[in-house]
Image (cartoon, rainbow, N blue to C red; front, side):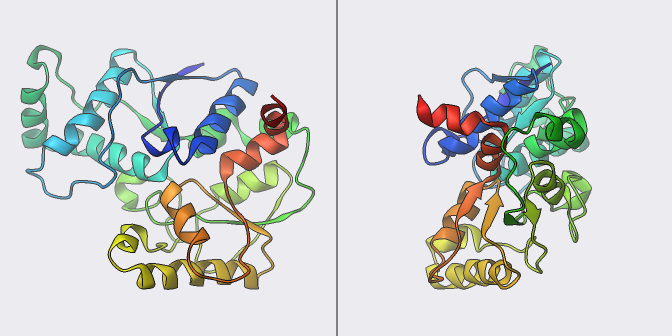
Length: 266
């Protein structure tokens, strides 16, 4: 099975593990992530103004390329997924946005929002299935207590993202169980880490991210997983002393499948 794949900027720099292990683990299940040619930055933040068109063009180009190939578009980064999926919804539901966007692109090859955008975790849950993942695990995590951290971008707004229950999501817990870990249940798994406010008010962002990590640690967590490079940064740099490790979920996936060990030996 072949999917179009949008990696995003950070996965080519600070978040290489999130990208590399996603690709390697997909191959175990005979899934090819075909990187979009000449993709550009998604913008990082969803453009809330309806008349903001320039920052919608990059996501639409990627969406259109996937649509031309009649492939679903897979993303891994929470921020990229959020921006691309919401822009896709804009094109589908707003005739004015669709008309103006296509006027910038090739009018004879217009895009109308037909591409389906799925997150890698949805690929695992809905296309591969966690039972099949269990069968492929070579090095289970032996009940290691891991706290899933969703953040806000994967889950909201629910009517557009439709990823999981925004108040009580479960896909990361199911994933952790499939690879042999013990998911830790705690109160703040779907709260914002402080996000981009860290660039203006580092103290506020540190309080947010520290409270999240502390909540997980109070429930016995030995580590945390996330799909967002910014969340990982904020959690790791939140100022909480003696914190726990924060992993990309693909890193633990690769460990359980035996792919991480092979990578590090080469």
